[in-house]
Length: 170
Image 1 (tube, helix red, strand yellow):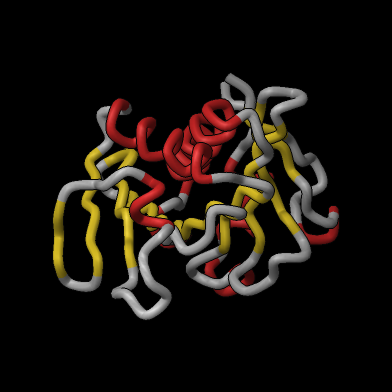
Image 2 (cartoon, one colour):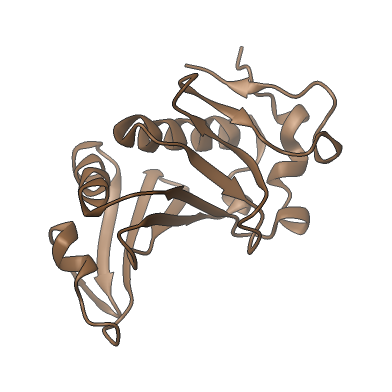
């Protein structure tokens, strides 16, 4: 039985409360961290697609992606950890890894488990915290991977979640 139960965290997965596309990030990163994510995506078995604007192509090294001119087309790395869930990385800065998930694709216990597994994979590869905030609210994380305890934990104000709370363990 999972430690993080849908009934305990459904408010954190409600697109009306959190926005459909909550912000997920890893702060204090480098080009090497981005490269580690690119390598994880390539080796994970996940389906992925890299595009600059409308041009789809091979995933270049992170250093190339992050050194593109400021006026270049937007780069997106679209990853599907499972067929019905899309994660979009937008490599714009070496200092922070940002990506979006769509809460409408993460409903029910399967969605919670999918998100926890993905955050754990990223956090473990980088050995850094991965946090999720409501869309546009970078100051108040609601959950995230904590490398100190090697699991996804709740970080939300208790008023936002079910009283029993929980965390995601492997």
